[in-house]
Length: 304
Image (cartoon, rainbow, N blue to C red):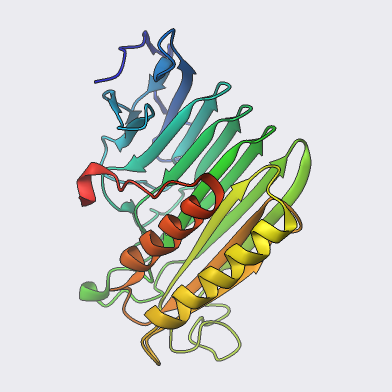
């Protein structure tokens, strides 16, 4: 078990009730990871306002830590404002994952869209593996997610996200109102990746051949190391292409790989059923980690 950090319960109410609007959650989670005198990563400080929290950091075999991110309310409701801030000091090695899929519930009349903002800073020689479970927007959901990641010298990032079409068993395929995903990755202040995805199925049907066509799930995986050479990244792109070709069932899944402008690669996937996404992401992650760090991936305990 890793060192126990001080825990700060942020002051102020976690629910706000503006006039004429439904109640909303205003949750905050701030985590700072450092390296102790023994050279091991520790969760140095944490602050939270429900429903966001963590319990503790678990020691990893390589000296890093694994931390599970909890939303104790069970999901994200209309109007919620959730803010996550993760800071890795120099040399910290951190794996962050969720305890289950992120469920985005139907927005009630009068609710604003739900918003989750995540800001991440990875210090020199740090490594962050940010591996959340699938995001599932329910019918009638309105959700926006803004993520900003700043990488310092020789910092590493392995980050994936997967979006489901909704609750298939309830007939809610693409029944959400809107999902907006915005992300930026910077290396030493230079932007190396940027995304702005706005999905509104009622206005622009996602089953159109101009959009997802027959596919229902899509996922993105970034593997970065600041300072990686062009030859390293080109070889990694080739290796990942080979894995993608060997793991793609014809007509079921499709994967694509490309290098970023510098320091990393991006992998995108589409799937009809989503059954193979987790295993495929692990294969890509393991390959990228070996190429960039000379050691394979260690899956979070929940999926071991």
